[in-house]
Structure formats: C-alpha cells, structure tokens
Length: 99
Image (cartoon, rainbow, N blue to C red):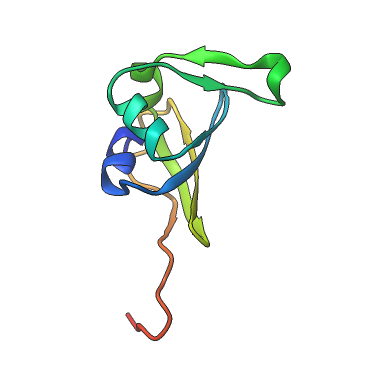
C-alpha cells in the first residue's frame, strides 16, 4: 500500500506520517494539498531543518506500519518497493464490536 492509497482509504482523518526525510502532520487540508500534487513541509527535529518535499516523492512511498491512536493515524513509510502490505495495520476498533 502506498501513502497515496492510504490517504485515499482514510479521507478526513489526521495522519502523523514518518518518512526517511522527516515527519509530517497531515490534516484534511494537507491531505488534499498533497493528493492535489502540491509540495508539503517535512522536518526531522523542528523548524530549523524544515524543507519542502514534492508530492510525487511522498505519495509513492510504501506504508510499512500503520496504527490508530484515538483519532490520529501514525504511519511509517519508506521508498522500499519490496514492501507490498503493511507489517502492522490496526484500525481503531469500536467498543462493543467483535470481529
């Protein structure tokens, strides 16, 4: 699953995206900006090292870890094409539902 596929599967949800180039917090507006092909700001430690990353470089990365805590998805992705499905993918379970 690519980052683009993940964002399309989970519209209107906040995503804390960790990639080798840094970290991005994506809300609905940032999702739409990214899916529209516009660059987003990525940073590793803070404002000092913030830089723009092109959408096509980010959207093609493969998701290898995804889990949801409360209403925030925490997603890790990389450029490794051997990753075809997430190692861990834990959608938030609703109380009272059994699988």
